[in-house]
Length: 135
Image (cartoon, rainbow, N blue to C red; front, side):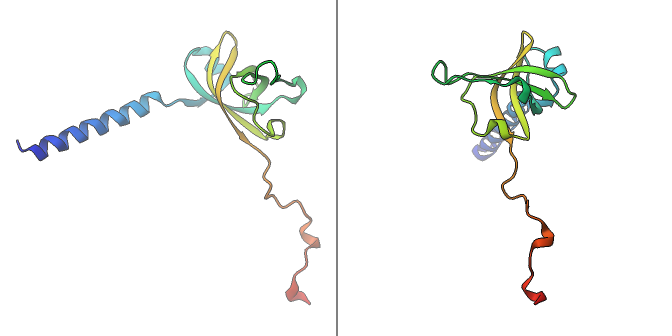
């Protein structure tokens, strides 16, 4: 067997191992019911911030702890503990994706992604716009 064949086989083996490692470590989208039932497994949970219950965040005491309640797509509400600083404009977000694990009846998140209202939405009345070709 030539050296080039051995090198190609090693590269292919490393590529397969990298792909398998990526697939094995990937988490999946779920609801709080699934995350709680499979405590310890990592999931992405999509939901909405429960504004009525507020947010516990005191940067003077601990800048890397943010506690809030999230309601998932099945309307199950769960306390979320995020071990990081409160994201900017958190309260204005339309939808939140938390990544983490359920532990002892709470969801411990290590990542937060937010979908905020778009600043590019057309909020003006389209009937009030003028078209210069009409004049």
